Image 1 (cartoon, helix red, strand yellow):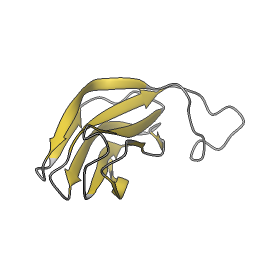
Image 2 (image 1 turned 90 degrees about the vertical axis):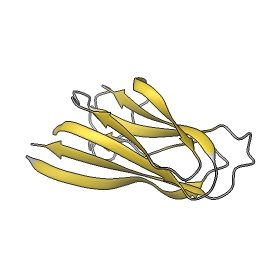
Image 3 (image 1 turned 180 degrees about the vertical axis):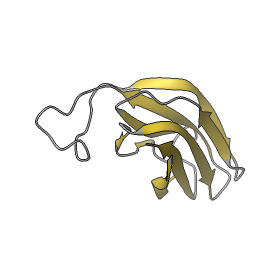
Image 4 (image 1 turned 60 degrees about the vertical axis):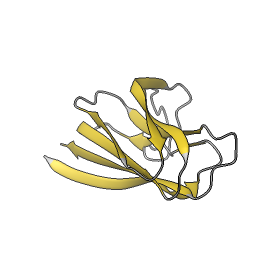
Length: 119
């Protein structure tokens, strides 16, 4: 198995919701996501999957349009990191969604990393 550890978000503003870029997950078997806020923020982190097919496009650059939640969202409250584990990955693409719950008043930033094991 080949490990991979990539940033999904790198210090994005915590006062606005955001979607990470699509991660082509064709060879991913297992993955987890860890997120951390730099200040006392509130929001959620959600893993999403898509089975859109990159017909005629490079799969590393393709941006799917159909996304579905995988599991439940985790609450990011304060500076305590949250870890979302997903044992099985059978999706073409993955992305992370950060939803700000502060009404735009949060300070600081949010970062998230995706750790995956694949073929």
